[in-house]
Amino acid sequence: MQPNLQYLTANPPTGLAIGFALTTALTLLGFMMAVRQAAPRISGIILIGLIAWLFVLGTLASQGFFTTLNTKPPRLFLAVGPPLLLIAGLFVSRSGRRFLAGLPLSTITYLHTIRIVVELVLYGLYVNHQIPELMTFEGRNFDILAGLTAPILAYFSFNRPILSKRWLFVWNIAALLLLINIIIHAILSAPSPFQQLAFEQPNVGILKFPFIWLPGFVVPVVLLCHLVVLCLNRDLYDFAD
Image (cartoon, rainbow, N blue to C red):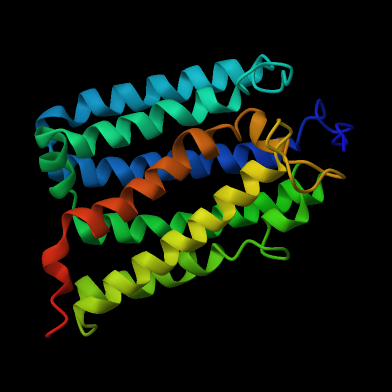
């Protein structure tokens, strides 16, 4: 079945684009707050690198680079691949793990609150025929629950620590599964050789500026925050408490 690409070249509303650009800026700000506490000496270099990456993605997307679909592999992979390789490299190297282990858990837990705004943006994209309904909270995407519960968990785990440590573990597992769920649906509904869902309205919105920053930056940051907690802070999960 061939996907309906009627809206592939249609531009989403300017207000929605500005809203998501601000969402990306907030994600960058929140992540840099954590980075400054973990590695203040190199935080400036990291900030420059992240801004450069966002600039490259934004420039390519604004020129229609990612909406060119007759390429192998799909060009969307060029937005997703480098962040994932960087994350893998950080976990493989000793210095990378040391840096990640220094990220404050409270900050990277609060950072997940940004997922509320992301879900509202996704709904706006759906209303404007840029993504399928299944990628929204009216469909199969329940990631907004992670955003709604993140500040509650963070507050009662760090600011007023009345929750046992196991809650941080359980919440990160559940929220990671919610993230994986929407990632799978986004991939399977994007116009590519791998598309299996939503042929009537494929996922074309994330191929455009500034929404390419979602798979190319926001999602990798959220994923990294989960992996830091689950892989580098095992001492938190002393369930004997």
